[in-house]
Image (cartoon, rainbow, N blue to C red):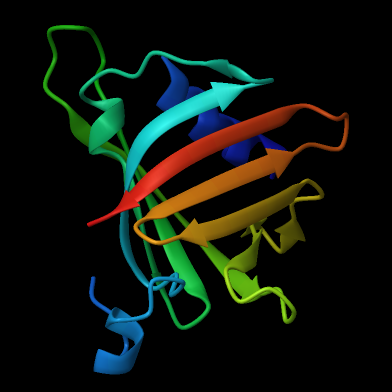
Length: 140
């Protein structure tokens, strides 16, 4: 399972709201979020135009990562993988959510926190060995 999230971050390195009230809530996490930037251990990573085509959709506690890739620098960008996940609200902070990746009935043991600030979403993963990966996405 760790390989999937690492793959998502590594690949990125080299919708609609449920109702009208939610669409006006700047802390709402629901909708489509487009990749803007990535960092690993605090250092920023250069993203290709293909990487920047990647996005995620979130609605009703479920989400999908759409990961785009190209086989070479001259190859066209294509959808390489869709990774499904679930998320839940913090319960205390209205702009904080926890993402859970599950594959083959096995849950990833790293912690992934998503925080919404207006039209920006910051997703931070802290792995079991302490590595920190951060992605910033913007609302579509």
